[in-house]
Length: 241
Image (tube, one colour):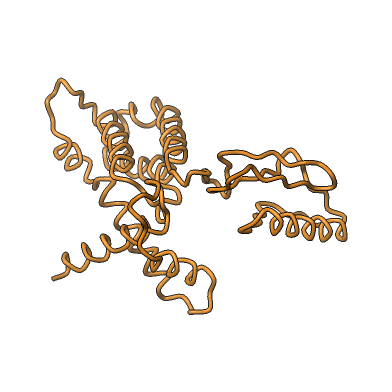
């Protein structure tokens, strides 16, 4: 039995993508595999007209967002949909653990924080190593993070406890610091890869893209990747000096 899942085909042109799709469909047929038309979607970025891609004479649906390997990819390269989904999923985990963990007086704060990191933070920051976030997006995630900690610690806004004090009591960092640490760790893994590895090449290429014109849209992945990586490495260097 053969099974293909999470396949993604990428092309710069409509004709190129159609050729790839035809070749993929032919290969699937050779191994008696069936392509699910309902689960196969097409997404374009900066295309003047919607693409027309078909499989066995069945036209595929064109979407603005689709989920790939657990993350949401958007046609406008914005992370808004992905971050909203991450916060929603993490909030659901928080809710499920409300009675069993957060309100359980038999558990120590240390244990609750470990559960929070293992279950909630891991859900919230899944794939964040490669996020090309804007400041307002990081702030939104951090607001959710602190709100969760206040709930676990039983601290309300009426108690007039600052966010810094909340983080200190929980012995956890801000989301800004966590994102920085994750990006630097991931960047280190990429840098240590062999130069022929495709992941390393893609990362370095996106970091070294040419400057973006001032009139370009706000969500320009390559430029933002370069900016974020430069900030993280300069911050790390300053921290060691």
